[in-house]
Length: 231
Ligand code: SAM
Image (cartoon, rainbow, N blue to C red; front, side, top):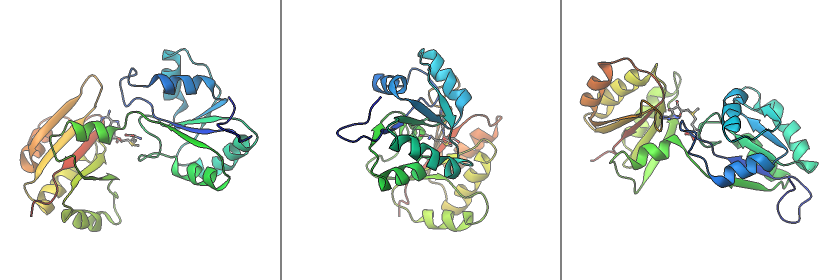
């Protein structure tokens, strides 16, 4: 697949993939994945499941947080030599709490064309189904696990826009507890396993949501949404 426009360089496509349900992918994304020379994938095994589903067969290279800095020059070389590359995450949109930023900045520096192929991102699906204010919101991704966590939570307390966080099953209750203790009885929404078999959306005041989630095992992937500071 040649690059876009007049450039002899290949194109870097940033391709969004499903966050669970394999059908949540655009026709254009499938087309791009089947036409590029190479797919740089955060998790090649997961991406292979998606490619097999759509009968796409393509060389893949792993590109994840621990090798992105080392791997980027190799990918940039390929792009400069005219090859086109699709960058995909394990799930959702690359660059959203996932690698992409590094290669995108390097590609811009080398005047390599970058084309985004939009699609799912967990925070957006969670936000639009939350019932919280969608006019303006702040996406924070994961809170720091240790250093800086308290300061971040303290800073976000004053935030008047809807706050959107990503969280793992191991820390979901701890984070909800900290939000309740630090920010009070705000409206909270927890969206779990969106687009998957055990999709669940829990809405209520912070203590109610915490109580409900504490009553069962915490499993899967979570988005936490908190209403902005009402005062
Ligand atoms: N790039 C992805 C995106 O665009 O949403 C996010 C990747 S980040 C490493 C993974 C986190 O996203 C999970 O820990 C969870 O907080 C959230 N997430 C991903 N898929 C989800 C889903 N199906 N339901 C709820 N949250 C999800």
